[in-house]
Image 1: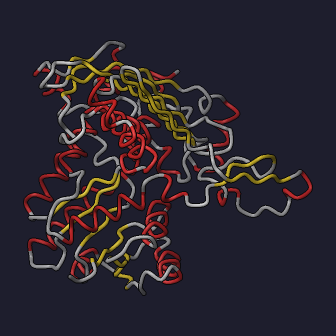
Image 2: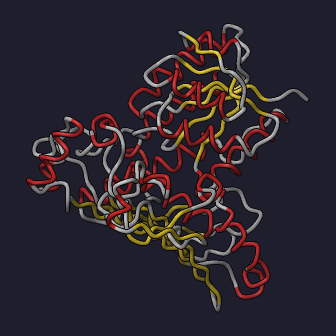
Length: 413
């Protein structure tokens, strides 16, 4: 069977991270990259990694003609337009037959549904990229606890957190382009991995039924005048007039449709975690057992004193979103593997080469988008959202949070 030919649409942080992950994945290559800012640099990195010598394409149609799989790694606000071009190319006979969508699938339920409909109409197999579900630490823990889950009962509570000091790019900070703030950016990770751990072994990723959502959003650091000035100077984003939340927390209640058991996933996310760098923290509990994961507990530590710190050129060599160049630093020898990107890509490649959808499809991505939007609605209204109410589900189909509309100052100040 031939190697899977993947075309990258997007040349930013996640595309570069995925390219590094592909070093550890067989039977795939980056055949093409869509020409945009950073594409030449990404192409050079892909070549240096030994993943092929990709062609830089001047149109999405051209990319779809030389690839089996289009990987959409562009900013959130561009994805519907990008997908419309992919679907048009596929419908008119281009070689592309699969599409990868990075989290979140859409900024709203309406947008996510449009993406799903475009893929279905064009006959494309889909993969929703949510890397935390593929983390070896999570899956090894679940495997270790298999007997306890069977004899004592399934996991009933998961607390999932992802935090760092803030995004790399200006569009992430802009709620009208990104779709909100930290809840849209990272809450989707925590909600998805919590639901995954709570799901009984062998069941479909959407087996559990969402029952209710309660949530709170706040602007704690980046709304202060000093830090608003920093954002304006660095990214041209004005949080005095168009802010997004830098903190979000909440609880989603799920029901097991077979047993009736209610279980809960708690999420907490922030853009104001100013310690070593990105931290993913997960703990899960069932009757008589539990597991705990913290991504900043590394088997490798490096110490850099004040004098030596002047020679550090890139703090992010240690860990993603690193904020420190000196002191005791947690260093991850294989960060892409730790976060699940390698396994995510490997399993997706295997599925697509068999002519199947990936484990996580765009239907799943739509469902995660719905839960994120329900959390925004709960925070906006200050009450628990009943996801068993058909009228609420209909409202979510067209809901867009005030923060995503650029009206966050009314809620956050």
